[in-house]
Image 1 (cartoon, one colour):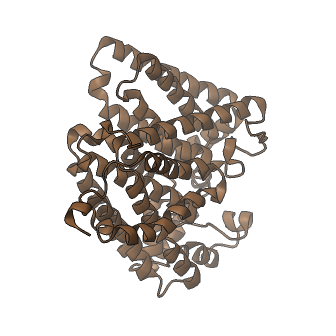
Image 2 (cartoon, one colour):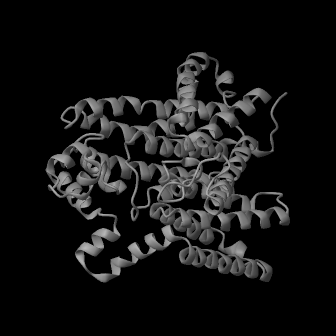
Image 3 (cartoon, helix red, strand yellow):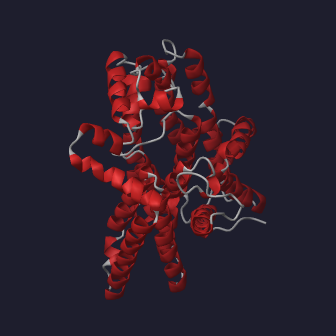
Length: 437
């Protein structure tokens, strides 16, 4: 391939490429509410990557965005590879390690199809509208007992379109919240549009609260606080902005208080959380959803397998072997706890100090990549960056770092960040480009 051809690998796409790229990235998030359905667009993107590499040549792999994505994947994947040889459940660990290869391949395909700022703007807007749609659907289910798809509210918590995966309603809505917050300062947005988005933010925050998923509470709270800090100068720029900010905060507090008083599931979770202050060990364990034994077992595993851990997805095997006869999770589910319920502890448990080093190195690379973006263009990559930062926030109860569904969401966000990073660093005004007809 000639140098001139390589230099145009990531130029403005045609109209077909423009909309196909938008649909490919957005559909992955859209289908997360339907269990494994999100694997369909991800698999399509994975299968396309080798074809694109053959079609384009070495320039496909040498692009700056591709190098960043592959470097981050190496920090995640190499510890998994090194944990396989002596994993406690070698077959499961090997399967999970090989299956993870689909993530960077899909990310490279996203990078190829989403090349200009206009595509990214549409994706961000669609993601904001998606979380609002989830919110409206969930509120309808809360008040009428049935959502827009006819799904009955039959679970212990609000489930919305997620059905029996009800925990994901609050968690995934919180992860997409930064894309909704981003719309508050979207360029050329009218005042009426901003007011509608502000009301939508309050409704989504209320829905996350009512969902009763504390990991969603923490992620949403962290995202809002960090967003407010980043926007503090704009919010304090005028008297009108200050009044609107205070009014929004006051209305948000009223929504949270009202739901705490009148929604039984929220009352239960809130009262359960408050028992942490009692000082009693059993009450503390109950407040933490009986996770103290999980963390104790995880810490013991990390000490017994310090270098490369028990292997990806090996936690549940070791936990069941070591759990007490009256363990809450063994008695309830028969298989014990599936993962450590804390991201960094889970990484140390399953891939050891090598995995923790890879996580810290990946975090450093992400920080350096953020610093590389010109300050005036960092808003382009801010939504996925904020979502990722909230996802890995240490003081939270996380999903498993190596489980398929959780890893899919993480790598989708990370791939979207790399796409945004590429446009922010090398787009040079790409936000104003139009697709070629």
